[in-house]
Length: 323
Image (cartoon, rainbow, N blue to C red; front, side, top):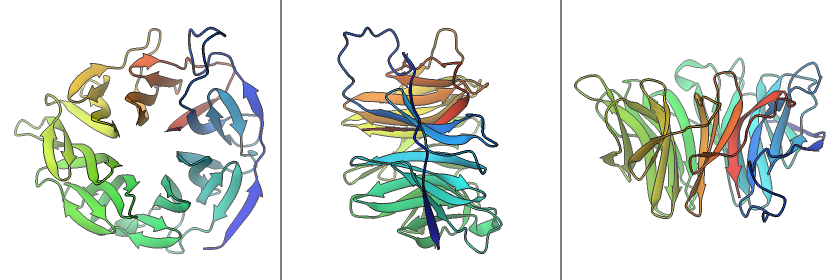
């Protein structure tokens, strides 16, 4: 694939209290760096790709074409954003834009997930192509996932093994390891999120019980554990030490988090969490990126709201990275 590069505009703006609500100026700087990626409306013909780092806004798109991000990640000191520009895959490394020509068998294509290991880039991509819609690229080498109905998340082990989770064409939870499909359940089910810690692979999802209620589960190295009562759909997972964090929805649309199987709703006074975008964990702390139905961005740390929406900023943030 041919690639072209441009340097993105960098516009830094500080907006008070974005990441640390109710903190005084005497509080020490946070030990964990928190990045949110998405877009802002800065007056151009289109929205501009942007990210925040600990509350400081950086605009890396120029609004000249339709472009957006779906995911972000940190590798060392490098920040990567992944998405699309003008209906073709694109990514930004430290604000530097790279356009990638779409696969010739697709009318359009986007990067949905990005993982970077020791400088090697992996992208989970989607384009409307029937049974070949989902594929991943490992340093530009394409692998189309067989027997796919959907793919929702990707992780890469330290040894370079690539894992993707989703559903097969029989509506069953599966994962692909280096492009080879593995069944997680023979029931009506789905796999939504994945985390890898050392040699352990954690996958969250659900299966439908005999009463047709979704049962939230975690598969650890293929072994299923129910993490809650029937009536919930997990969507993502993060692991820190011995703590396993899962986010999802109850069937009444309540947004919840499970920590080691104990469930609690995400509550924010004056806000109603509805969307769930991402969860990351570090040093026992869980960071969750959510939003109201209207798009108001909400960031939680250990279930406590950290980022009230700043109405002076027009935009939306949909992915999260911590360092």
